Length: 172
Image 1 (tube, rainbow, N blue to C red):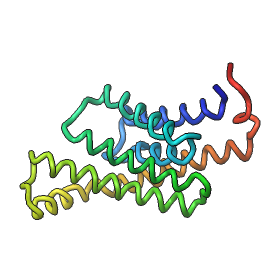
Image 2: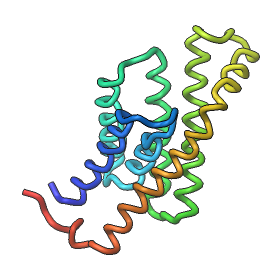
Image 3: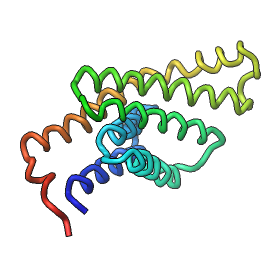
């Protein structure tokens, strides 16, 4: 396995396991991890499999819940959003994509809470109540996605620029 692939995998795994350390609600690297994986893994299959597997492994430690399908759907959509960054990455495009990441996850995960029907009425008004109840957590989602996208994308690009030989070496 080459060091480029090993670096990508380690960055994704570290981002997933950042969920296990104390942090403010929703200020995590998970959204950025999915976006980064979509943008950098060589194949679309790897870009889906590796970040979602890392997420699943961290969920083994945190526990499972009845809206997990929606969480994984949200992150799958974010990986697919990362595919749009494969050919052109800029601070503006990554920042914009990080904001879209936050919004996608917010909408999909809150929709999942509403669909599961345990907390809100199965009406349009119930959906609106569910979305409004999620707003206090949305700002940390945005801050986390912006911060960790900058860290992951910026860190990887810095290595490419200042230590390209590192990513070109082969690990045996």
